[in-house]
Image (cartoon, rainbow, N blue to C red; front, side, top):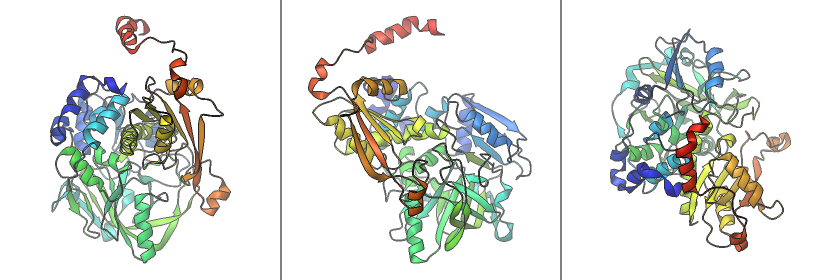
Length: 502
């Protein structure tokens, strides 16, 4: 349980916030540094000559579902820029913990709680530092030389509408009213050598920025970072509060500013050590068919439709550039694994800041792609405590988008264990009295359960079930005793007799 997180977390959590970055020592600054650390763990395989048309997507389907599978780097992809590569499955094995700067022995709950304690509590924001040039400016395509097709972008799924260079990428946009810079992860499809399209769900920060530019009838500047350092990518995937820049957050994590270069055409900042950066503008009314794409729900949630186009003004890239590939598959998959860790930490932080006491753990389950199945454990203190925790989890910033089921249970349950959670739900809840339904909640066109009629009307809302799977508060002391050993005895049994299962 979270209360028994071990000496490693105790040591980390005991450090002052100003010393955390030095204590944690995130062991890389860019994707290449991360790759070196993954190789030290013995968790990288190299494949030469695989095709972008078919091979890389097929291989991704095999490896991305396996939590113990290695990272794979595809080299010498035929017909692409010499030395260019595609890196898949960064968030598996011991490198999950390495990526976040923690010891490899921490389990999932320990990892997410350590992430929260050491990064999110008392977070410092350190803005980026502008530099004149960096590795990403080793090569620049502009004008007639622009050709995004030259990079080894795979066809990730058989039925995709095109090649998606943006799966492990993030887009940098700026609010035209306030100047707030946002990093957001949105799928990016190649249209032709000088243009790409990216889909953003309604309500997302990048979509809000884009809508403001369109309302002004102005072109929106944007840059797309394909192959940034994994920590910055993870923050681009996470629900960082509005008006906070993810560059500043990662600077706070590291205890030093990120070095950024300003785009020649947009003036937007991107990491000086990024692998590939696409720079351009989205003009009002410039639309082309985008999609379909196999999405994080495990479905083709939407057909091809017209979406805004980014006209490419420049592509910056390092020698021997690496595309970070994180294509969604039917969950659970890699995308679900990395979202579960970071989003669970943010969820617990959201609930705690709302004033709900004694939340012992939170986990957004991989099978629901860290969105559709939310689990929270509490130490019950008063009548209604479980309902309060469940409704906050359903509607706070992290939990509000595209959720479905929220289960709140007692602190003796490991909420990251799907079987334990289901057992608690089946034995401690009553279908008629333990479930609250929330109507009209924020969802997405990618939700396969939203009807075609509602999608046609632009009604992208769904309902939520908040399930109280705690022992009923008023007679919890009379609830039947669990037929299981104490945590201490269970640990002793594993240590003494665990060899019998191997």
